[in-house]
Length: 263
Image (cartoon, rainbow, N blue to C red; front, side, top):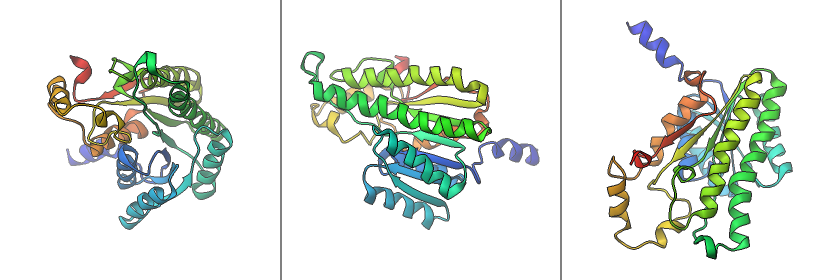
């Protein structure tokens, strides 16, 4: 029984796996990066703010892991290609990627400005595509398959007040995931999304800043588990989708929202 249990849990082991993660300098991305490092992955952590990337790398390395960083402008194709090059120079290959960067703007549909629309769509959808495209090309050339995980949102599945552009961008990420899963399956490349709900680490805090004090009670009421998710609760889903434990899972959106979408 012990050997059987060890064999089962070994499928979640990421020892020696080269994983790229974007948006890894803070929030959910940082939590997932730390968790992937604890599972044995060799990490290339990307994002916009160098100091935050350095902090994440230091924490991983101090804990005995392997990590490096690369400053990334996700809406620039050359920058995405440079991220792939950095990972290859350091580790020789890319086995998985967690494409996690994103922004949020709050506005009603009629008040969403052109700038807000393009900012959200370009970062969340186009930037995710550029990163996935560059990484997918590399995985195809390696001929070993791989796993691409895109951070989406439960806002791709249900409507939230003031999040027209955000919801549209994340719905696009979900469909892009299914399209890539269908087309890259022949290369044994799996593509899935993690769709978070309300967490204790909102992106930039913009949404919560514009809500009344009773909003927190309403979130808890509408979430069957009665609370927000913690950043480290996204580590398990990330490890699962990057590891061989999910070897026959592709084109799937894994909703991690405490049951919010179940109501």
